Image (cartoon, rainbow, N blue to C red; front, top):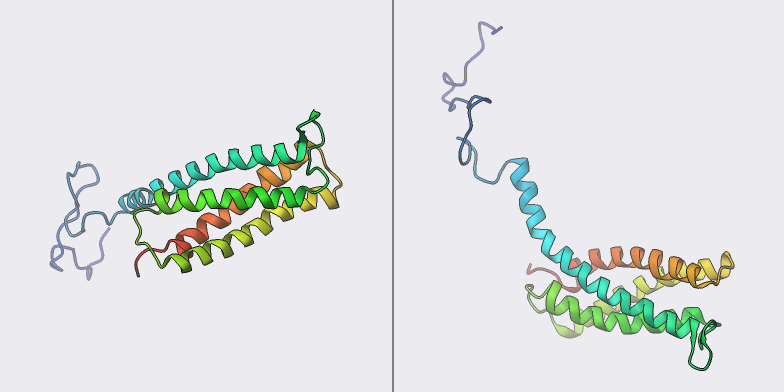
Length: 189
């Protein structure tokens, strides 16, 4: 039902709206291409999909290295095999060592592959920010392991790997992903 004082789109000079039952090809009249919510979502996904997948690939490979190295240091003794390793009594020091080695590998992987399309910032600044971000991320990861070991009293292979390697890695990786893209390897301004 229309009101008598209502102005139609045609009278106002606007183009007629297409019928919802008519298939349209290309952008709708009066709208720029890529302005629909679906196309904006698609563009956003395309912009973030590649860096996210490469970041996760680099992180996944380095995660496997970090977990293997930590387990060797803490739970493997060269003379006796698996059990209590050389650093079993110092799990935080062992984790800090593995994080340091893993951080060097992730810097190279992310600088050259994940964020390789971005301009190369001043290397000293980039490395300093990378170190700062990784110190904070290491603190998050060590906090998870320390809580499990010293607050809950859990020191098994499973407990260390769940708290320090799995949960700690999820927390620290999420933090790293957000901060690397914004501060360590920023887009041009």
